[in-house]
Image 1 (cartoon, rainbow, N blue to C red):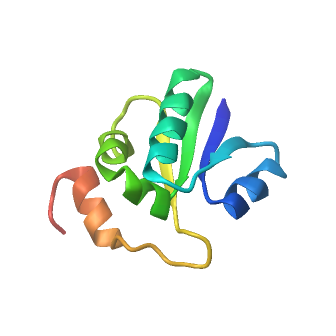
Image 2 (image 1 turned 180 degrees about the vertical axis):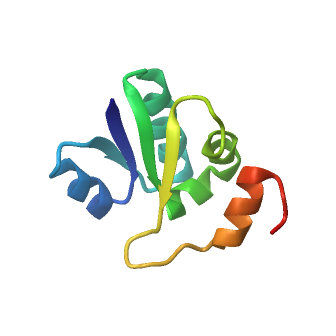
Image 3 (image 1 turned 45 degrees about the vertical axis):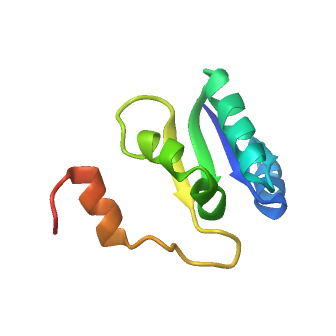
Length: 99
């Protein structure tokens, strides 16, 4: 099982130090390209994406975020930040029930 990270320069560099490949992105077009590349390689079972990059392509990411299909998408907070999306909101989306 391989991991792939999409995010800012520092995040991608940090993950590369532990052997995770990825791509640093700065624009929406870069984000779309990196996302497509990650999906083309079927060996990537987990795609790690920073929240700020995911926001650039939110509709695309949300289709995979809570699906049972591969790849698994893990969204992490941006560098030095906290999640913008509330845990309750994410849980409600995942299970389809308002709690």
